[in-house]
Every structure is written in C-alpha cells, then in structure tokens.
Image (cartoon, rainbow, N blue to C red; front, side):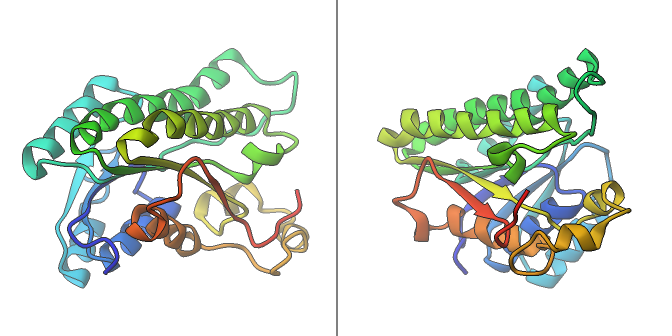
Length: 247
C-alpha cells in the first residue's frame, strides 16, 4: 500500500504500459485519474480495476496535445481532490522512418505528443504541486532516448528531449520538494511492440541480457517506486528498465 491517499494522474492508459501502471497504482491503493483519448475506451477496464482493488479510479478523456483540455483535467482533479501527488506522463506515439524519409508532419506529430504535451502537463501539474510543496512527476522516456536507434530518428529525438526536460525540471522544482524523474524502458512486450517487430522477435530477445522481453508490470513497478515515499530523495534521474538490453 505504498501509494495510499496519493492522487495520481496517469496519461495514455488505454493499452500496454499505461494499463500496467494503472493496475500497479491500484494495487498500492492510489486514488487514480486514468487518461485516454477516445471517449468510453477505458470504461470497462476502469470498472474492472475499481472492483478488483476497491479503489477510487476515474477515467479522464482528453487528447494530451490539447492544452485547454489538459488544463481542465488538472482543474477537475484540484476541485475533486484538492491536490495532485503524482503525474505519470506515459502517453506517446512511435513512428518508424529512415533518414531522408521523415516528413515534417511526422516530426510535428511525434513531438506534439511526446514532447510538447509532456511539457504542458509538467507546467500545469507543477502549479498545483507548488502550492502543496510536494509531488512526483514521472516521465516515460525510452532506451532509444538514451542510446538512439536506426529507423527511429524522430522518436529517439523526442524521447531524448523528455530526458533533458526531466533533468531541467528536476533542478527547478527541487527546492519545492517536487521530484521529477524519467523511466527509460527497453523492449517491452506490448501490442505496439509486437506490431512493429513481427519479423525478428528471437533476434531482438537475443540482445536482452536477461533473455526475455520486459512487461508493462516491470515498468509499472518502477513507477510505483518513483511515485512513493521510498524515493523521496531521488530526482533528476533516468531509471532504465531494460533487462540489460544492447541496441
């Protein structure tokens, strides 16, 4: 019960890592606001989590790239709970394209979701956290944001920007007891990963020291640590959850 009475907003919860984070936060008794873009898309999952863990969980439907909608979501949490303890910036998109084949529209689409929306939510949530003089912001980056990857120039750049943003925000918000950290997952067994890597899954697994793909639960457990008081003196860090992956 590491997150009892902690109010958390988690973005991008309709699948994969986001769903895993919701479940682990629920297992640790957090008060959860789960974001998804499509109206009604997580209603069934939210009800399942509510009944399984007997926790307060509320779906919030908005596009993270819509600043007005994001602001309204933060204001709703403030009105209903009076505080926000944890923000998990998980929503993101990935698109493959070789150098020379990356359109400006693709660049903008990736950065609007993976970078600009994250920056917006950091600013919006930190205003509430500043009043409390406490909070934990967790940004989901990627191993390719640290090391890069061929065919993923724009995505790697966006996730590298998340890391730089994390370090800068951590320095600025530390005096107010607001912690900002990033998690850099490696190859995680999600629908998105499998759809992109249909052809050579065995070859990819051979590049993982632990010999298996990571799971959403692996990433979610790291989020619980960074959201909880166990990490109260940890900020500005990039936590790799990659099973010793070589890329």
